[in-house]
Length: 154
Image 1: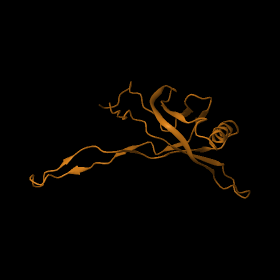
Image 2 (image 1 turned 90 degrees about the vertical axis):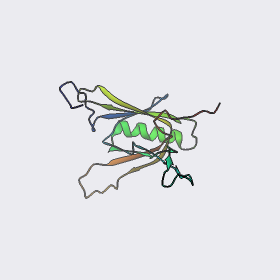
Image 3 (image 1 turned 90 degrees about the horizontal axis):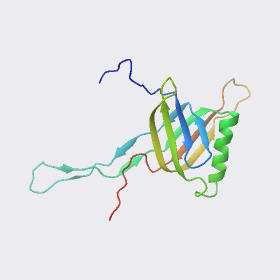
Image 4 (image 1 turned 135 degrees about the horizontal axis):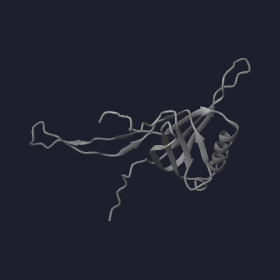
């Protein structure tokens, strides 16, 4: 379907990150990397079928999410507080994270609900008194996925 005047387009520079079931609104970020999914595709070749192969979806794999932005007084302090809660225990804030993509009118376009998230790493770029640059913080988050692909054995 081609784009028209009524098509809502998500802007890559307008997204917001919130830790679910807590008071941690991690704010807006400059970049979000790693929001993708892949599958192992095992195949089976029967001995009597020549080159015929049967293949099917296997394990789902998710990369860690990497969030990047300029360090700010308010939002970076919220991230530090969230990291402090997770420094010695996973139970304090382990849960979901919601990433919401917005259009140019601040209307939500897409939402990803990351399951069982846990901070994997945080860093800030090198600070140099001789340089005129902005301090950039990077937050890496591990998760168990954003698709509804759980299977329960009954």
